[in-house]
Length: 316
Ligand code: VAH
Image (cartoon, rainbow, N blue to C red):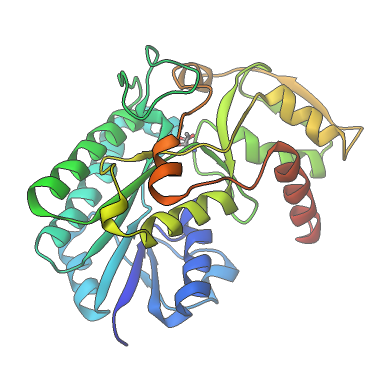
């Protein structure tokens, strides 16, 4: 089979689209998708799949040897809102999987790792606008603490053991191929499904909650560009800031109403409002732009049009 790529958490929101994109780039048989349960029809039909629990170090090592894996994308994680309900399970999942994969890098069983971080690493006293790469980081969520700790471990394994691990601080991601996965930014996905199916949506954040967001195609392209960049070009080995756009639920609703004039939105903030309030409103990603040429392609209007067209085409 020759050297392959292993995706852990391939059935999640990012994992699904990352798997399909990597298969297009490298060939289906070169990309092994894995998760604790099977994924959607398109993903399962697109190439080799394995049920694999990334917290199980032995099972992971067996898969790496069996498939001659040389790169791992670790996309398995418990996201912000769900992690607040199950803090112990979230910490175990998010950290044990990272340690399992970093060990394989340290032992040179694999030679490149991607691990996702998030704007959740920032906290209430982080500068909210144009948040810099290096700044105050006191995350107030279990998910954010796990991502901040994970970033430090990635930088440590790179410096101490020469592990080529690369990471991005994803903003809220918007996509149509998979259901949202327990995050605080899920409203920006749910709203499209509800607008088409019911003509209305009750948003769990307030109208003016401005957050950094990105269309999934941009996030996938950033991930692949980072992984293809020459190692010597990378000045950041914790996790790169990454920015495309910022918007509020009210702005997103108005963008949708340009296509669906009858669409109505209501606001009923819940426990996720406190999480969103602890995060930045916009991100300074100059290091990503300078080191490996990052540039977003989707703004709010393009994202809205693309989401509605894709969901209508998919029969939603
Ligand atoms: C979440 N979608 O809401 C994730 C993301 C920046 C937010 O990390 O938890």
